[in-house]
Image (cartoon, rainbow, N blue to C red):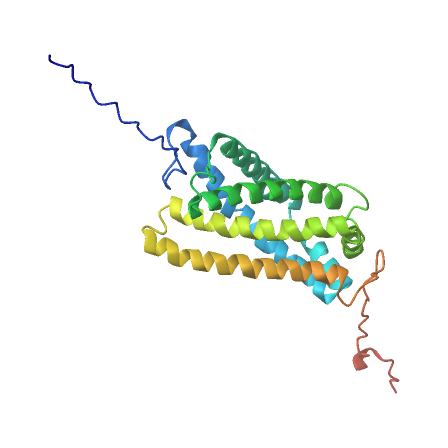
Length: 261
């Protein structure tokens, strides 16, 4: 008696979870928004970060030198227009759109713990830390307490008093490392997305440069924090007055009274 042949059971197709998409230009209507987000992260936000770190480095020279730097920056022409156009508004857009990208993206570090996924996730978390820190820092230092644009020499004391709180000191240190890492990796992403470093070899080599940049910036930033809490000026005056040097011109012989006979 013939027996019916049983058809083989269908082979189960393994489910593959998508990882991070390869680096390429954004698709659809969000292309320009992605490009603007990437560009603002380097120019002008990156330029402002470099300037801010170098300005804070003046704290190592003492309260007067730090106050001189604050006074110089606030004395620039159209400083408030520059502040909102090239600092506040770009940071708001970059931060909020970065959160929007994060909420729409997937990293899958549990299923695919590749370096790209870890970098993607670290970039999102460090960006969030940076955005929250900058928000509170601007509010506390710029819009609360004594006004530093009108009292630049009170800036050292104001920061020093804030850092006396160990929790705020920890926030500053963590945020400084996060911001420097976020910027350094952001520069690497910028070069890759804009076609500046085509190919894996170029990206790998530029990655070493960006890593060195991030470490150098973090060292500068942490040294500035040390100037406020453990440097040579542990108890800075609240609003020191810079020394004023008075120059005396030598007497003019021609102006002396002469007797005419």
